[in-house]
Image: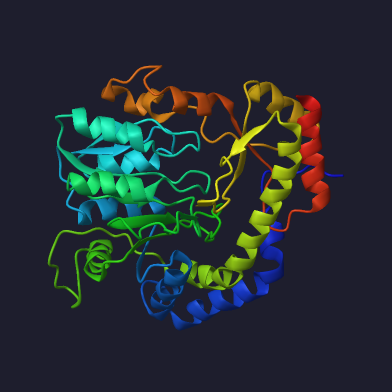
Length: 371
């Protein structure tokens, strides 16, 4: 058997590449590369995936966060609460609007700990402009609890759902209870473009109209009439053309992800020696962006798997509070022990829609043999 990759985009794209090419060619023929009907069609179709009524496409997941922070009223000098176990784009967006990140630790599923958030909001004297829970590896944070906590203090909530396409928790989708949820369509995401792209979704039509103005130089309707200072954050129509094809296959791909995850669960639950994410919970419907295990000898295991031709990934090896880029915040090792444990122990194993039973068994059995 050849090497087993962490994920396999060429295999995913092969059956639909002609359809994607045809849709891209239609944009080229139209000459409408920025804005136009392809963008509007994509936004309408994505609302069905997001399960929310309104969506605004933007140029990246990072820009989605920036636009959502601005639209929610976060100002220079504010503090924005988030978690240290996420990609740096989450805190980059906070810095870009002139605010400062304020971290709380994660729980056993790798997402914002509601109890720790409650403690922070009760004890801090800082002006909190927003809270950004991050849905990690496809697992949503406890949004019913988090939004209730923040509502009591009149703090807007913006969900970073970059890894949570199709996720639910306690019957709630990203953005259903909060002000905004933001998505990334980076190529490796469950719904990925052929470059950078993103979106902001909401139950608020006026909120999404603000995002649409911000992404287009502060313009709401008429050309050359700008009602506010905005940005150039527009998704290009070629990316919308790619995503519109892939949206049709997204439900099937999600079912396949869940089926593969359950097969991994069967292997690891029988052994009793592997911790995996998320912890089994009937209230959690993961998007299965990644299948991640935790082990104290993670680095040793990764090297051994590589020798067997099995690729793995680490998301993320250095928590944000220990990154050089965030050293001015004054955090130190030991401040967020659960996030630090995840950074030291999590390992993402091969996982993609269409993964064969042979590949699944090879990976799982190799892991169990090596422990």
